[in-house]
Structure formats: structure tokens, C-alpha cells
Image 1 (cartoon, rainbow, N blue to C red):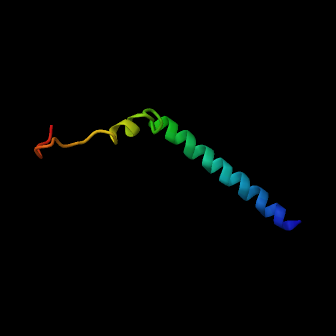
Image 2 (image 1 turned 90 degrees about the vertical axis):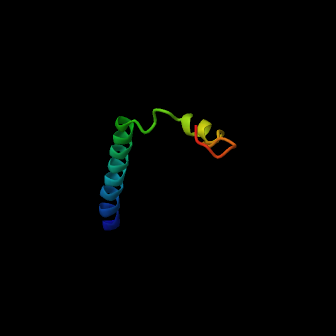
Length: 53
């Protein structure tokens, strides 16, 4: 029974830390452009002659 007295506050603390980290990432704009990285991988950065655009 004493194990539950330790595990429940630890679980609540970890859940709170995860929520704070998620809200921080939302405010920092981490989820603003979800499609940008998926589309950028399809295009080359260099031209065929070896010169950059």
C-alpha cells in the first residue's frame, strides 16, 4: 500500500511535466508547419550542374 503512496504522486508529476512540455512546444510554434518538412524532402537543394539556386 505504501508503494501506491509513492507511485501516484510520481505519475501525477510526470503527467504534469508532459503537459507543460506540450504546451510550451505549442507556444513556441513547433506544430505550425507540419507539411513543410514532408514536402521539402521531395525536392533537391542543388541543381544538376552542382550550383545552388
